[in-house]
Image 1 (cartoon, rainbow, N blue to C red):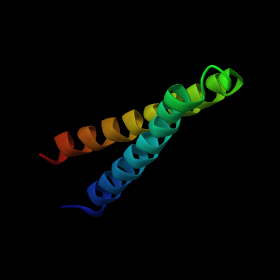
Image 2: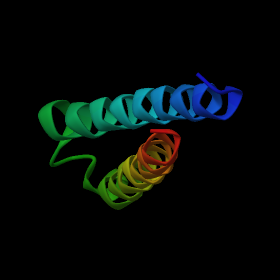
Image 3: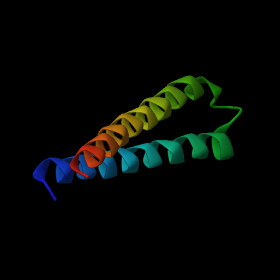
Length: 70
């Protein structure tokens, strides 16, 4: 496996972990702190969206690189 593919795989794993952590924060807000903490909802939701988008972009780059290598 090429060094580029290894780097991309590492980036996908990292961004997936960060997206999962952010999703847990959103889940905790919904389950434990709403409606009182509704003021936090938009910020946490945006951060979760951004983290998931970063994972999606990294994953797409990995898939494209894997296709080129095949």
